[in-house]
Image (cartoon, rainbow, N blue to C red; front, side, top):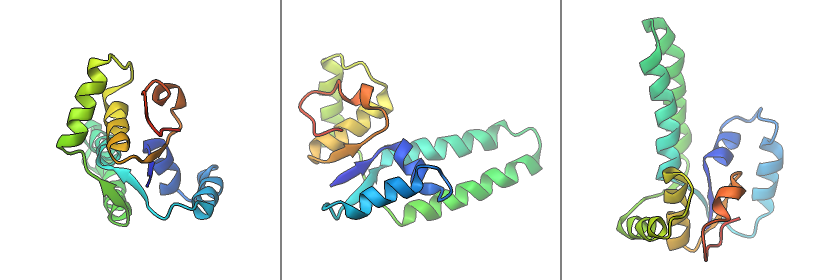
Length: 137
């Protein structure tokens, strides 16, 4: 399985993104048929739009954010989304005990990748290279 982090999902969400063609091309030639993301990425994406809605000073400023939120739900409805379950939580705790110094959300994504023996595609290589024994690139 190939897991895409939030940065890569952002690229795929917007076909006019400068990296869209390159990333979709790489994924299309991949021998791995199962390409997914994590519930952590869904959470990060949703938090962004919900924060925009919350910050809006005027009700009409919320309209485009709600439109984007609906598009986000539609976008993720077409994805395999890997959950953060008990095994991932235990992996997360183990990595925390090792004092891995990356953000909590990235560490949760890494934990999911490790327990599924998945290849993690990330734009945050400097963070994920700190995670031991992982097939994270």
